[in-house]
Amino acid sequence: MNPQWLKLWSASLVVAVLSACASQPPATKVALKDLTDFTLIYTDGGKAAPKSMTVAQAADVLKNFDVVFLGEEHRHPGNHIAQMALFRAIQERAPNVSLSLEQFERDVQGTLDDFMAGKIGEQPMRTKARAWDNYPVSYRPLVEYAKARGLPVIAAEAPGSVIRCVGERGADFLATMKPEQRGWAAAQLHLNEGAYKDKYMRFAAGDGSHGEDTDKDKPKGPSAAALRSFEAQVTRDDTMAESIYLHLQKNPGRKVVHLNGAFHSESFLGTAERLQMRDAKLRIAVVNPVQIKAGAKVEASTSDAKTGTFVLLIGETPKSYASMDEMKAAISEQMKFRGANKCEL
Image 1 (cartoon, rainbow, N blue to C red):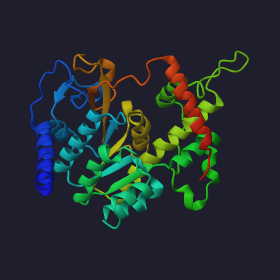
Image 2: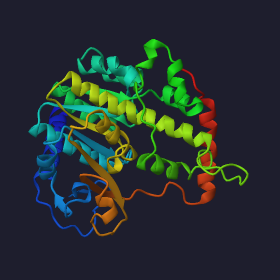
Image 3: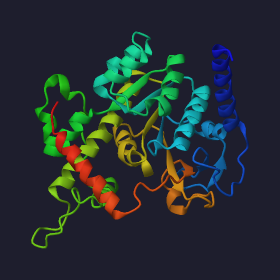
């Protein structure tokens, strides 16, 4: 078979699949077919009666927002397929959209810009810009779609080295950074009490190294390590929020589709909340992924409905560990890795 013909045939097949996803009427699904299948449920943050929509119908709603957060379960095939289909459909309706990514860090924006301009190839970009190892299968389709249409791509995240330092030394570390490095993280952090902090502390309590102190002789409340961990998390959230905000300030009239891990935007908290703090007038939408068990009814629960403008129902991935012993062994290895990656810029 002619290689060039095969390449064209494959590209046509991808377009056909995405078009089918976008145009088919929503069917009442008994269960998701497999891990590549997904269903979009419009809930308006729990204010509307849940309604199943096609990608095209969802894009008709989302095109009216200034910023759309596409939350993801990292490496989930159905989640990434849905992201691509949604971004494509939104851009077809709102051509002036920019792509913002948690998966690239601020200090490599120049490298990413060089790649988008065709000045360097993909492999040097992936190396110099520290692209995630799943870039080819998860993010390449989005970046290449943007590149082909001259759409800006924002490296929104704070560098991992900065996050490690904040996690080790606290948010005060940012004031010690060199002037040329300080811009790698948000100028202002929102460390206030509230729903997001409560949520994060509940999450942190599940990790023995970041949980609450259990010593009866100590005051009850989050440990110093947990508070530093929250400060590191907020550094990420505020930096992504500021990256989007600054892009919109420099480019009036543009819209932004931003990809991040679901925790950063679920229930309109985290990065989404911090963006709204920077500009209360922005219309912000959240597409929040929810995994459902194999064979489960395809519907959004009352609590899930509140987590986004749309709930993206996707299949449940296999359990990471079959036993507590496996999980403890994995955590032990992770702690060794953390110890080898101390704060260093």
